[in-house]
Amino acid sequence: MSDFTMKALTPETFDDFAALVERNKGMFASCWCTHFHPDCAEKGQTAEGNRALKQRLVADGIAHAALVYDGDRAVAWAEYGSPEELPNIQHRKEYVATAERLPDYRVTCILVERGFRGHGLAAIALRGAVELIAQAGGGLVEGYPHDTGGVRKKNSSFLYNGTRTMYEREGFTYDRHKGLGNCVMVREVAPSRRD
Image (tube, rainbow, N blue to C red; front, side, top):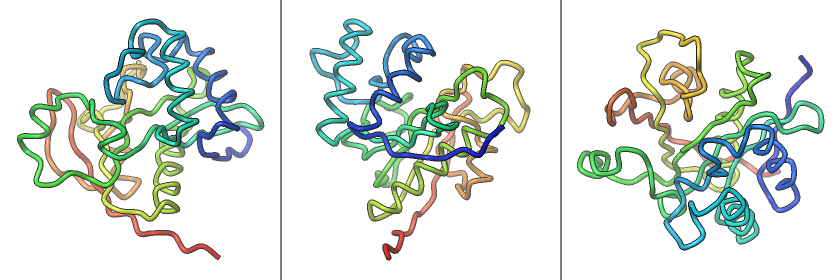
């Protein structure tokens, strides 16, 4: 495998993201990773509508992600954003009832292209999201991975946000459970210095 690089999702990298999504059949249920964004008339109607919505949100600067590249091809991604940008998390009712405070950012979805799984790209994507959050000023970051008890699953396609073990390796700490088989992981991210 070659060295992997990371870029932010922007209008300039949207076509790379779109190619990744199209190779992966629209991501989960053709959502184009719009599931966690606020509800609106365009959302969830069609795969084409979800694509257009995602492109509009990226153009408006209210959809963020780290894209992982193998050469010039995006092969993995980690979506992140503020709770306002990404309010529709899984098990939201339970989450709100047990939250002491909202994070500054949350990581809601990580996807690795099928042929590239098993090479640590989910962790690279998560690391990329954390780096971009640091560049944006840092703050409290939450992720909601699956808590598999450290057992590696043969089919990891259901792990839309990685595992607790991966988050722990990336400096996150366990906060609490969330739903059946998920948990809340937290990390305080310092702002990065710009030279």
